Image 1 (cartoon, rainbow, N blue to C red):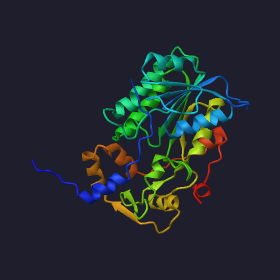
Image 2: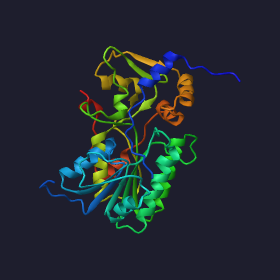
Image 3: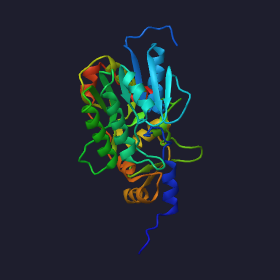
Image 4: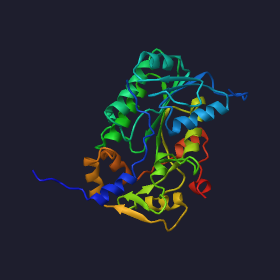
Length: 313
């Protein structure tokens, strides 16, 4: 059998653009007043969005239950660590007045898989919801999610949408584009696009893929508003402006001349086969356009989308 060899240079470049794992994919006090009724349970609460949402809810005095794989220090009233299909996690979800399901993974870690990270976590939440108090469930999906997709990440995200919709609860799904934080807390996607001292940035493909990154604060605002009202359904949630991947890299680095190295698509896809930390579905997502139409979400939830340039000046 012939062996396919990946050039070491390209492999090293690919390693640089692997973001740190942030999505939680486990299976197994303020004096301010809030207009969010009852307790909010958040799965995957120690990821980028979960932490930001918990802080926002703490700031308005909401009661929260954070569900995470491992014990961690986060701004929640109650912490439940362990698999989502455990009896303890199920009991916490049943007692919540609203549920935000953030657990999932674009890059499953270790023995985890897309099926386990995205589908089985949704099944665990849906099972707990059947006899629970919650009337409304919020879920973060990804633009382009479709059960007929050849991309396993997009397919399992769409499966999770269907599973939650069958729970009998009001379900609001936000299909997000790439989520970008602030310069002080950029998050895993932006971190992978920031040049290290004396180095450039590695980009999968030719850098011409079109993206519409959404600011983390806008995602949190959408979730916070959707807890209180708005029609159930599926909404695209992207930033207000589209740009190429290379333009985004230059914007995030605040340097129009930042060195960018492009890994040819064939090399990137080959690495997706042989490099466990860069799985094929993730490579495919990064090679695709990441855009959508946020107008329905903006109108329904009264959102004011933040231009990237106002955050990354």
